Amino acid sequence: MTVKAVCLIFFVFRLLKPIQCDCKESYLVFCDCVSDLKNYKTANWTEVAIDSKSSCSSSSVSGYNFDCFDEIKLLFILNHVDNIKKGTFKTIGQTLKYLKFYGNNLHNIKISTFSGFRKLSYLTLINNNIESIESFAFKDSTIKNLDLSRNCLEVIPENAFQDCEITKITIRNNKLSLIHEKAFNKHVEVLHFDYNNIENIQSGFVSGLSRLKELTLSHNKLAHISGIMSLENVNKLDFSFNCINFIEMEEFEELKELTHLDLSGNKLEQFPLRYFKKIKAERMTILLSYNLLTNIKIRDNVKPMTLTLYGNPWNCKCWQNVATHLIEDKFTTTKCDLELFKAGHVPVCIDQGECRSEPVQDRSTLRRFVKILREQMGQLGCDLFGQVGAKYVVSFI
Image (cartoon, rainbow, N blue to C red; front, side):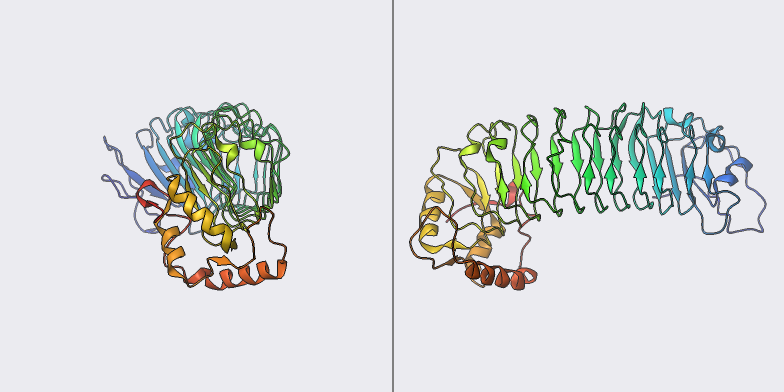
C-alpha cells in the first residue's frame, strides 16, 4: 500500500517528539501499538496500520482505542492482538470498509466480536491462530467478503454466521472436519472450503442456501457427494482432489444454473452425462481428469459440453467410440487437455479387450496406470486445472 499524503508515524524513531498533524485528505498512518493512538488527533484519519515489532502495554483492543475515529475506512492490525473486546467496532463499524487482522493470536472469535459493520467490503482474518468461532460472532453485520484462511478451525458451529449478511466466506487451509447445519446465513452466495479435512456434506450444511452460487471443496477427504440438490441457483461446484468414488447423480438433475463442475483428481469409475439435460447454459464445463474412467457415453441427448478427460485409464476400444462422438456431437475440451492427449508420454488408453459399460476388473492394471500418472504429473507442460476459461477452449480434432 502506498502512502497518499503527509503523515507517517514510525515509533521506531524513539528520539523524535510526538508528531501532531492535521491533513484534509486521506493518508496512511503507521503505529507500533494500539495504545499509541491516544497520543494523536485521529478524528480525520481514514487509513491506519498497526504493526507491532516491539512489546506493547496491552495486546487487547477495545472500543476505547477507536472512540475518536470519525472517518476511518481502512484498518490493519498485524502481529499484535490476542484479545478483541466486545463492542470494539461499535463506533467505527459504520464507516469502516476494509479491516485486516494478520499474524495475531486471536484463538477464539466470541459472540458479537465482529458485530455492527454496515459498509464493510472485506474482513480479512488470515493467519491469526483462530481455533474456534462462537455462534452469532458476526451478528448484525453486513460484510461482502470474509476470509478465515490459514487458521486452526476444526468445527464450524451452528449459527456461527447467522443473523448477519455476509455474502462470501472463505475458510481455506484450516483443519475443518465438521460443519454444522444452520451454520450460515441465507444471504451467502459463495463458500470456499478448500484444503481441509471434510469427509462428507451429508450433514446438510448447504440446505436452505437458496442464493448460493459457488461452492468449492477441493483437496478434502470426500468419499461421495450428496445433499446438494437444494442448490437451485449454484453456478460453480468444485470437488476436485478428494477421494470420491460415488456420486448420487440424481442430485444434479435440478441444478439448472450449473455452468462449471470440477471432479478432477478423484476415483470415479463411471459418470453418466444424461443427468445434465436440464442445464440452461449453452455449454457447461465438466472437468473429469485423473479419475478411473474407462468409458463415457456421449450420445444421451445432452447439450454439447466442454470436457477434460485426460489422465483416465480409457479402454482403447471404448475410446475410439468416445473420440468419434466428441467430434460429431460438437463437444469441446481445453488446449491443455488436447495437448496432453497428443503428447503421448503418458498412456492414453489401456488394452482391456472389448468395450464394456462396467469398470475394468483388473485392478492391478489400474494401479500401474495411476502409478505412471503420478510419476509424470510434475512434468506436465501446461496447467490442466487452471486453464478452463473461454480462451482456452478448443474443438476436438
